[in-house]
Image 1 (tube, rainbow, N blue to C red):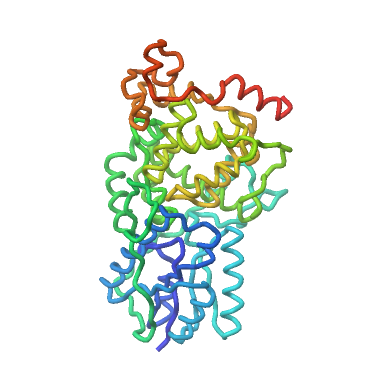
Image 2 (image 1 turned 135 degrees about the vertical axis):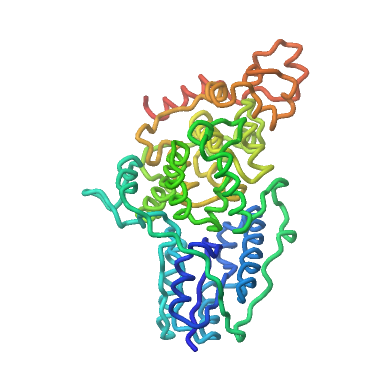
Length: 456
């Protein structure tokens, strides 16, 4: 009886799962496998919020497979060793998995392929993470990748995504293959208090609710900090409990400005993946060399810690940083503001901010996180690398009444209206009664330092 292995990585779902459907078509028995890779933990990728969310995802995936007569096989250790061991135990001729695009994932995939081939088995890699254009498939005439989003998007939008696949009705797993229990979320310490639940069933429930109540207005409200009207699907996209291909098809069937705006955001995910696939070093090195002499932990320790703790004296920045710790998530507009503030107002190395985000964000993704940070720092793909977002003006625009700030900065809860964005301008007596710090730097001073550093 022919057997195959499906290695789940960042695709923890049954709906629209090309590796699983290919394995089911090729074999009588299939082993759905997830390996808790010790190398991922050693590299610092297994932060508490993502570990807890992952536990939810694996438990939900196991439940869904059991409803179809199967089960999820979980192993721990070196991924290559564990996959080869399971393939041997199942006597599987093929291992199917989704493509990944970071340097770490690419090296791991190459190791796995060599080890399987040495044992007379095949590794078959499927594109199950991007929507329409796998990295390297479409390139401009003079380069191996697109460095600017707009021309990339024009090409991307012309390519029709593959059809979304239905979930299988039955999965037969060979009894001889052994594994361990899926991890328990409650065993993870250091988790954000309001971290959402993970898993495909949770993701599909959230998707259905958003489609009914939020999608139509997405184009108008996705930057509104107080309204909190974004989809909040990013963690499910990161872990693959939702398929971006399915989202694009559903959005285009729905139509309207909100759906178009959401599809554009999904295109950004593919854009960043093709940049990272072509320039793997961009995960830790400047994509475009600017000669910056950033302030670091040694030279700006107090400013950096104030930023991390949400005590910079700029309410919208502090609100966002506190939201990050409490929820393991941050509003997209707030991500732009906090990243711009750290890199351009405080002139601190973007890698420090990117590492902090990767620790706390449940949707922390190497391609999106690192390249968005570089975009804001002016070292990445932004065609206007010296743009500076004024946090006060941005707060007035995207949190005009100050509701977002008051939600996350209770010290300012008694300050009514837009005055909450500039507490240093409050009357002396009112200001003295607030347990809130003065700004760590004046905006004019920060802007001047940045311009001098960039030679403007």
